[in-house]
Image (tube, rainbow, N blue to C red):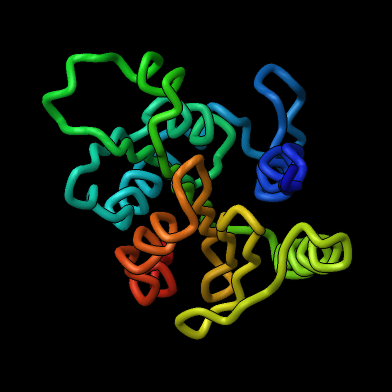
Length: 191
């Protein structure tokens, strides 16, 4: 059985990406910006970032994850994600049915504005992945990607946007989505 990176990776990235001074709604702010006050700014930036998600490849369908966008924006996080299904757009089955049938899928998640120490945190996780045999670091289009044995990919593009490509699709299909992603545009994304 192949090993995969810990599920806590997404939670760690989420927590690490919270802007300094973020407080929960209803807490005394002491000058920090409450979470809900950041919603519109983060939402607008997330929508811009979402414009950099690649279109669905031939024979695939794309679903943009607007629920996670709203949740992340509530915490002031700039993110965008989409799921790509290897089915025809005319497929009458719902997404849950397709998932239960193990239809290949690719999930692409983008996070922007990581804290200054994000590169150090990711490099520590990547070294741990290499040392444990759960992945290796590979340079692709001038960026350092961690690649798992299942073909999942993750990079911190231009020290600013975390790009994660994962899912049940083959490693080749995930690479095809990486090739369809405009890495240069991600590197140029700023507020």
